[in-house]
Length: 149
Image 1 (cartoon, rainbow, N blue to C red):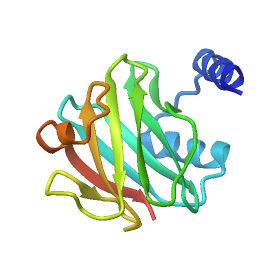
Image 2: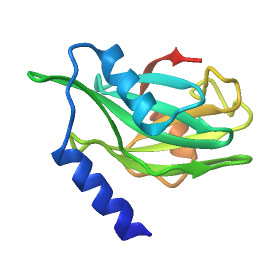
Image 3: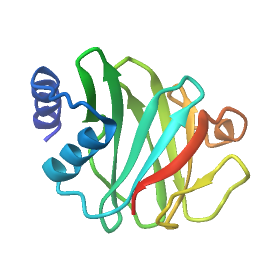
């Protein structure tokens, strides 16, 4: 299964669709992925735009919203993860930034931000960090806002 996911990600990168606005890129992602849940846009301290997407109930994935001279595109950068109580996983953006995202049911501290659907609090840490304690002082979230309820 892992090989299939990696192959799929490589194929998508070569067939990237660009759109004139970020809204059009998001709408394409919503349609192509069949997204039924909420989407939150995180702006990182490095000015990256990361999308936290609730695919279906308790199923989440992460995408990246990019702009270049061709226009805007929104691309998946993680597989779907089904959660009941929370979780964390490593991310690598198309521009080679590395992050770890943490999901918790209760707010651990002020560095965990609520998702718009109010199901989880999240923290985004620069680098691949498996220890949650690092998320307390190294959160990379500059801003978070709902783009789809």
